[in-house]
Image (tube, rainbow, N blue to C red; front, side, top):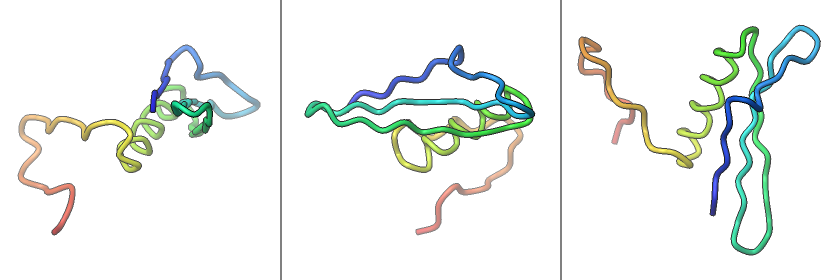
Length: 74
């Protein structure tokens, strides 16, 4: 599967910004994933979070000073 993400795809529609990603399989099937935010940055952040939740991209690196919060319990 290939995943296409491009920050240039984030566009304003009415009072919101829409970020978009496209997943494409070897068999020609595809899915488009959207997220919406008040700003382009918010829409992009929500999209990246959704893609991580779906395990389509790796987890975000931990920030310094972020404590020891675990992302998953097991």
